[in-house]
Image (spheres, rainbow, N blue to C red):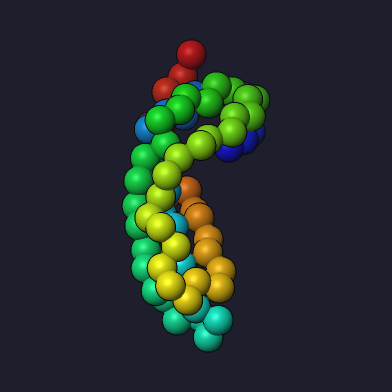
Length: 72
C-alpha cells in the first residue's frame, strides 16, 4: 500500500476482493480491513488472509474501498 499524500495518514484501510472464473463470472466476493497505518509518503506491505479461492477461480482482484484519513 503506497500513500502518495504529503499530508494525510491512512488507517483502517478497507478492501474488497473478487474471485472470477475463466468466463469472467463472479464466484465470490469478500470485504475486510487491513490492520495497518500508512503515513505521508510511506509504503507498506500488508499480509492478510482472505476467503479461500473458490473452486474454478481463474483470476482475482483486490480494490481499496475506504480508509480513515487524519492529518499530522
